[in-house]
Length: 284
Image (cartoon, rainbow, N blue to C red):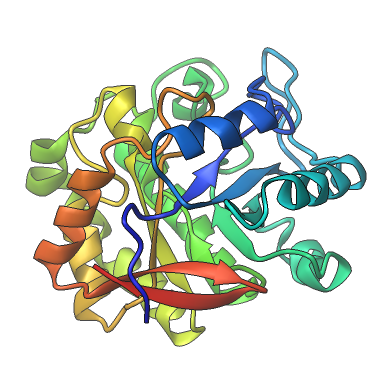
């Protein structure tokens, strides 16, 4: 077990993600300037992504991505450690097709499994919380549907390292879920299914990430909410990574000091980096 001065940022996006135009070389240089010694690039790969108003698609061009990362790893080695990752946007319709992704791409060090879609809709857009006639759906129904899909994913998909931003759905709900609302209302509604999700993640030898991206998007808690993170710890979960979910250079390693303190307060003794899809533990 080793110690890193600043935890590695294991959730970063570059020009290879459809919702990002940050030059990947600039992303690496900025990470070095911030004092990091290691990062993992995790660009989006979301098969079957629904048609949305801006017609954005997230199929990752692995034929271009892999050689570019290889080139940059060689350029900055050994001064800076760049790991090769991907963020898989997984849904029930893609579990089977994605389950052998790492065997097709053995260069991968790390795979985030993320849920970005609920019942075939992107919650970033209001229609995910509306019936076809435009009338509103009770937000709790959408939240539960999201976690039902996630439970399906963790029982049918195993080709990943950590599950990303587990409570991402709360980022876009029309009732603007904050720390108090989650504690007062939604934890009781979701705790049973979250228990089953986390139990499956741990049973399969996987981990979760502490994602600070919610903080610079206006939320007052990281993903996952501390009550969910505590549940994971109480169930025996040990594998955690830190990710900023940065799509620009400004937010690399955002609020990692707070994330580290939260993890330590929860009783975690170490965080993980990954190489060849295997966790490496680093003490705080």
